Structures are given as C-alpha cells and as structure tokens.
Image (cartoon, rainbow over all chains, first blue to last red; front, side, top):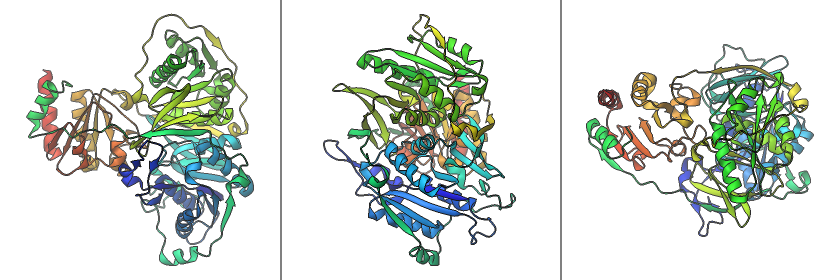
Length: 275
Length: 324
C-alpha cells in the first residue's frame, strides 16, 4: 500500500496558554513556543507505518509512506523526524505558515495526490493550532474520494479498509475502497487499533507512537526530501479565509476554596444557586 | 441581505437539538444583514416527519430530501444534496457536531466556498459577516471573513442557545436526491453503535460531572451516583478516555466535546490546557482534587482539596438528602 501522510507543524500545544496576541490584535505571536508536529498528524504517521508493515516484523517495509508538509525550510526538521520514525521519503511544499488556509492546503495536497497516486491519504482530524478540522474533508471532496474522519480503528481488508469512527454518542463503522482519505482521532494509536493485511489480528502494538532509534535518525538524513514551490501546484495561491483580528479569551478568576463537602453543598445551594 | 440555509441534523429520524443552535445562528445572520433562512432536512422516509418538527421556527421554506439511499448518513451522499440545494443561498449553516464537522467541509469544497469551523459568534464588521472562532485551544479568538460568494460555517452548540419555536407554519417542499460522485461508489455504511442513555446529552446538559484519570477503573462507580443525584451528563478528561476508563465520546476538551453547562463538576481532573478549552465557559465550576496545586483550581469557582474517593460519595449522599 502506498500512503501519503500530511503533516503540519504547530506551536507547542502543551503551552498553548502562552500564545500572545500582539497589541492591536492583528496577529497571534507564537514566537515564544517551540514548533512541534501536530499530535494528530503524528498519530496518522504511526497508523501509516502500521498499515505498511507486518506488526511482528516492522523492519521489513511492505509499502511506501510519503510524508508531506507545507512550510518554510525549517519544517524540514519535522520531515526528517518523520523520516527517522519510518516514512520512506518526504515532500516539502515551500510556503509561509501564515499565508495558508484550509482550502489552499487541500488544493496543494490534491496536486501531490495526482502526482503520487497513493492508495490512502492519512492525516490528523485537526491541527491543534487553528482547530479548523477541514483539510481532509475538503481534499476528499476535491478528489471525489471516499473518506472516514475521526478514525479510531483501521483494518485492512482484501478490497479496502474497514474504519470505525468516533461520532457523537457512539461509533460508526464504514468500509472504504481505495483510493481514500482517512483522518485519525487519538485512539488510533491504541495497541489493537490498526492492522495491515499482513499483521496477525492477535498482535498487539505498544500504546502510542513509535520513536526513532539513533541509527534511524542518522539514516533519515539520506532519505529523499523533495521541495516544491506552492505556486507550481496552485497558481492562484490567494487566501479565502482572512483573519481580520484576534482577541484574548475572557479571564476567568479563581474562586474560593471550600473546607469540606458540607460547605460546598451550602455554597452551591445558597450562593451559586445551581442545585 | 443574506439568504441562509440551515442544514438540519437528524438522529434516529428525529431532529437533533444541534439543529436549533444552527437556527439561532441563522436568525442572527438575518438580524445583522437582513434576509431570511430556510432549513434542509435530509434522510430516509422519517425525514418528512422530522421536517414537521421544524415547521414552527420561522423558516421561509423547509426543504426535504427524503430517499431510501439517505437512511444512513454518509458525507459522500449528503454533500451533493446540500450543494445542489445551496443554490441561491449566501450562507450555509450547520452545527459543529461530529455530523456537521464531517459533512460541511465537503459541502464547502463542492461549492468552492470558504468554511469557518466551530464559530462562537457572528458580527457585522463594516458590512462583512465576520465569524468569531476559538483557536489555540481557546487561548485566542480569531475574527474571520470568508472571501467567497457563498460561505459555509459550523456553529459551536454551547455558544448558540437552542432556538425556540415562534409559531407559524413554514411551507414544506420536497427536493430531489442529487447524483453522488464516484466517492459514493467506494464507501459503504456498516454500522452505527450508539449508547442509549437516559442521561441528558453531554453538549446540552445543564449539569456535567466529569472524571479524570485519578478515578482509574472506579470511574463509573464513583461518577455515576453523583451524576444521578445532579441529573447530570457524564464527561471525562482526555487522560481518562485514553486510559480506557471512559468511552471516547465522553471526552470534554479542545478535540472532544465543548460544554458550557450551568454547573460543571471536575472530579480528579488536573486541568490540562486541552481540557480547559472544552469547559471554561461553564457558569459555575467545581473542582475536587487532592492535589492543591492542580491548575483546575485556578479557574474553579469552588475548589475542594480532598480525596475524591471519600469526598464524592459524601457529596452524593448530601445532595440526595437535600432532595428529600
């Protein structure tokens, strides 16, 4: 199976409360935060690796995983780490982080898909900076491909994939024929979430994503990394979503400590009047 | 003038309350710019009776697309229907539920329209509809304009009160199924397992009791009696869901459900940024945690530093005693 994994770098989500709104509100400054791979995209990469191997013999690659991202030269650090983790090659679409919107990213990825012809396109369900949750769906529609968003499990079958999706109130299961788009939710990295056709259904993965061993980090430097200018893929690279300004959320002040359950019940009844 | 199309959401053949939040957003757009709104209901045969449920909300028209092929939701089949009916509408509005988040970006792509996800407010800035939306786990609000003739938005249910009926009888019109593309030929609905619960829905509940990883495998044993005593929905932190103590769709947070109940009770939840993003608009927040330094206490209205395995049963008993 050939899989294209779309990755995005985001300002460290564990310190998202440290983003600063520049005076006047014209932009959000994340300069004080480290760049990290969007966690959901890391999970997508893990799912791609699981789908292109026999879980018992992961060193032998059974498919091809191509990692793609959009951004300036520095995002190659993130692509190299994806290569060290196991991706076979990488593509960087030269672009500026703040001159992209969901539509433009999807249009660029569509061109890459047309050139690469993967069986499957995987990515996170959303990037945790803009929280827009749209690129996978837009890409699927532009390509007229079937999709499964918010995937919790993926199982390769003879003719395609069986995917369970996290939906309000439960789980929806779909069968997809190739080529298709799947966006992943956080449970996709559970021990029994993803099975390639070759992996024994009794096999259990370690919880979470795999880490690159040192030799792989060295070897990743030699893997192929192509750079393509955005304009060569999408001639009209104008934005359709314009952020006019930004504002901080309202402050919420800490309230009072209560000494015991009795005081809590009393305050909820007589002060807050919510019970 | 903005003509608005509300995309209704059905569950088991009835209208989900998410739809009423989308109607509120449509009314707000009409109030800002003039124009009217219509509602599109899609499904198998029950869609017609579901459409009747929406007849008293002041819509100019209710469009019903009812067909056996639409009984189980698939974006590949629904998006062509919405796009076909979107002609003549300026703004397409749905809810940021798992249904809306799945469907609406596909609709936007089909219309070559820009799309704003999970909006929390709508403004008119110098004649341009401007959509306020949370970003960076709710640590910034962005105010976006969409530079396409048609615009698609999904609304955050907790930020738009459910619309009340205003009376009247909107005319119903049946509309045809739109031919799906190649995508629909390669996707098959297998099953939908929904947990039937007597509890209120998490995103709509007036009271939510959420548990964290500290509860371990006693999650339900501890949380359920308290939720029963309060008539509350049950939520969980991502850590509790990750660890398998609570099902995935219980997750409250940036990438789970966003709630804004009158009362939110956080049990053994430390208050990670991602969790706070999903509950900080709650009116009253109670935190019970044995770690006095837990970040949740920085936004809790009432904080109790205690062992939850003792404090929660005690609280449950006290609440039950009050009811009598």
